Length: 151
Image 1 (tube, rainbow, N blue to C red):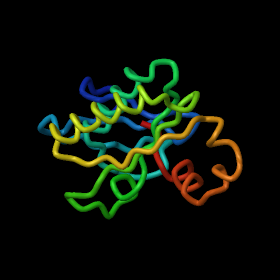
Image 2 (tube, rainbow, N blue to C red):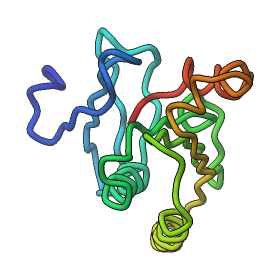
Image 3 (tube, rainbow, N blue to C red):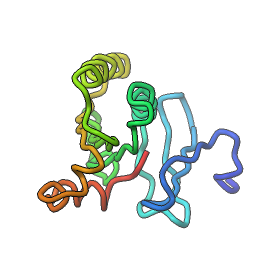
Image 4 (cartoon, rainbow, N blue to C red):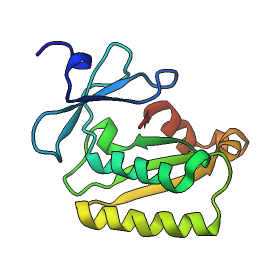
């Protein structure tokens, strides 16, 4: 199969300083992407649906410079997902979202969910909220930041 990084249909995702670099290889129809293991990744072969990339791109568009990172975690990353499992995501922003940002994100999120027949469980924290107690000490935040992948 050769080196994944040299294939033209691969795309690098992730933050090397956090959870390693993942290479997404298109191995079939446009709705089937597989995350390939590289030496610096923590887990093997979670499936990354293009809807997650589409959601990230939408968040970057709506939030602009306020977007920091998007964690993908849960059964779709760790294994055990069923065909109808949702996509668990945590978006980290530079500052809390405005009402206008929340409304636009919700509208556009629903468009993606309907178009791709998926369900997102999307949460938001500002970077400051994520770093301060009590949020920083919650099992939820520790789990997401330790076991999730940055998309």
